Length: 168
Image (cartoon, rainbow, N blue to C red):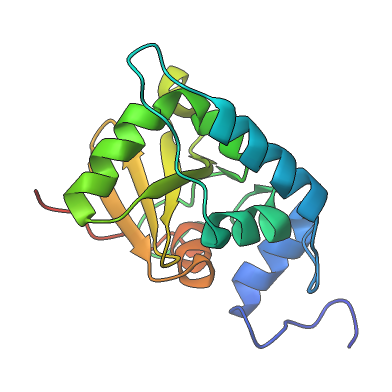
């Protein structure tokens, strides 16, 4: 397939943004994903909170880890944030992700951050995935449902769709 054509997996704009960030179909860095899994498993907050690590998270890390993804347009409903797929950006968010997991009835693992900030320090949102592959964002304004899988979550973020807010 010529490099400039979209895969059928993602809409054209999403595919283009992912490729601009360095993603290609078949991208897979399991060594990096396993390093992150070990680091997250080994972390414990001062209050004893720990991260969950499960196959759905490791798979996303292996395929999209270390990408910095920016939307290539103005966005449909809101400005697309910059997305950094770096789970260690959520290292110190074990309690927050645990709270989100209890609210939705599933364990959570960090995926990275969205927005220009660096997670809690810079005002961006922390991205998380549950064991079923559903993707969420926690930011200063609330908790958001980005999609039932990473593909739809990336489409929501990159195209600037307004995600639904989770209600408590």
